[in-house]
Amino acid sequence: MTSQLTLNTKFAYGIGQLAEGLKNSALGTFVLFYYNQVLGLPGTLAGLALAIALFFDAFTDPFAGSISDNWRSKMGRRHPFMYASALPLGICFYLLFSPPEGLSEFNLFLWLTVTILLTRLAMTLYHVPHIALGAELSTDYQERSQIVSFRYVFGFVGYFISYGLGFAWFFRDTAEFPNGQFNVAAYEPYSIALAILMVVTIVWSGVGTHHRIPYLPRAGGEYVKLSLWGVVVRMLGEIWGAMNNHSFRWLFSGALIIFIMVGIDGALNLYIFEYFWELDSRAKLYVLLLYPVGIIIGSMVSPITHRHINKRTGVIVGAAGWASVQIIPILLRFFGWFPENGTDELVITLVALKILQGFLAAQSLVSFNSMLADIADEHELKTGKRQEGIFFAAASFATKTTSGIGSFIAGVGLDLISWPRGAHMQSAADIPAETLGWLGLIYGPIVAGCAVFNVLFNLQCKMTRQDHERVVKELDIIRARQGA
Image (cartoon, rainbow, N blue to C red):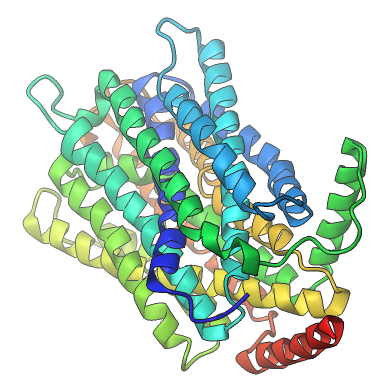
């Protein structure tokens, strides 16, 4: 484990996040709309399917982290899982957007549940070892932020590609489909394009970081062959140990809050853009594409800001800022102080706000993931165990709440406000004004107001730059003694 990684290594590691970005953007933006509004599955059932898969992740994420933490092979602890996941992920993602025609409501619910569960399982097999690998590539406080920055840049390049292919090509407005996202036939080729990109970038990341395997930490202690139950018991013990870490417990709790908020935002984006703001496909594309641009810019700036502020501050400022930008446009519209629908001023204002929101989100995301690597060092000093997999499994689970719990809450919310569904509901004129108002309240003030809990939780996390420097020095002394 050394610092000063080459640019090629950081690039190869980072591009592996493209697959996660493609998957998250598609699941967070298109799945609920596709199954609910286009195929007619009730919002609660669609949200329930996404939530079931998420709760399954609550077990598989730490399981994958524990297994990879303790894996022994010539390719180390992380790369075998990265390579094994690529093709299954591509196949499962394709099936998610290709349900057979003529399914009953219940069978459509089953298809969504099974395919999204398998898609998440395949991604877990890759993503947890991949993000754990990032913590192992360097122990340097500043370089870790750079590594996370590379990962987030490529992750949101994935969003950029997903939205670009979607709204500029597959779901573009045509004479036959004035609202392109209602074109059922476009979802299958869209999923094929994204699946191919996922497979290619996962393999690229594995091959591009393969040369670092000899320098990465290995599983410690003597090898003990365990039964499945033994693995589960070990995993539960490792989770308990991680949750006993004061800094991790509060950081993870705060992350869950903000990721659920982001998930509701993503699930309702198409509803807000189509019916509340009444944007056409081109305007939707601008707004959605410029959000990841803001995150990419923010991800590149974050390592610079970490030279001057603690990472905890970055988490808090980013999360609170994201929530503020989420609330302000809705409230201004209710008071009549926001540009009217159908005007260029509206699109320009929304684009500018999305860039700002993405920039602020990046401060929180990069700081959060970089802090996890620092906390893993602290955990090693206290316990003698190197367990990045368990800590980053928590990060993976928190990220997945964006399209799991967030989509479930969004689906239930749509049913609670009696949102009319079906492909014939294609404009704001088809929706009661009161229902549109409730949609805006859910999307903005009701959900984003929960950010106050994120701030309170993160204020309890005490890890600073000075704390981490002390931890690394003590670990170096211990490792030197063990090497002697």
